[in-house]
Image (cartoon, rainbow, N blue to C red):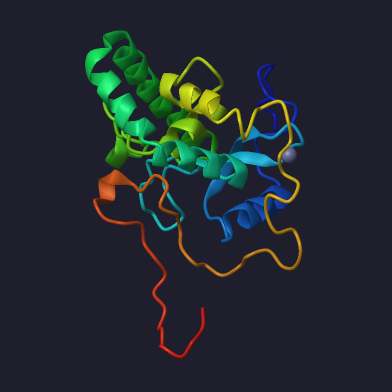
Length: 223
Ligand SMILES: [Zn+2]
């Protein structure tokens, strides 16, 4: 809290207990290793969670910015389903200014992650040096990652994340609160460790799907 700067939003980057509960409700699972809330709804609820670059169990984790707001995640999924990533990837091969801006976004991502790691007291994570997320610096593999980065960094940093945000304006815009009814607010917040991370932004470095909780499933057990 002592590191207050003029560019800070009106709410703290530091996740409160309430933030963590809202995140677990937004995602339908408990959150782990969230160290900052880099983007918030106008009402104050989290839009993006920042995960530590090294998880509590020691695993390096390159995907720093995780989009959590269900209204935004589903809107971005619509863009993905409509084939926007293919179109972006084609443009990245032919539009050099765009490709350069996207490379710069990759560098910004790495610098932002280093800052988050530093503030969280984690320090350098050499295993993921130069590795960002979402397909950066040359490809688009996950629009959610790019939108999470754009929301965290603000406009003008990630050109393709900014484009995706513009592309979902029919469903979500930054100036309005879309939280009401967007997730279950009744009952207990999810507390079982169902999975560490969802399909969004699987850590490429691991080269395999994110760990899923092993459960002994018997056919007669309903989920
Ligand atoms: Zn809201």
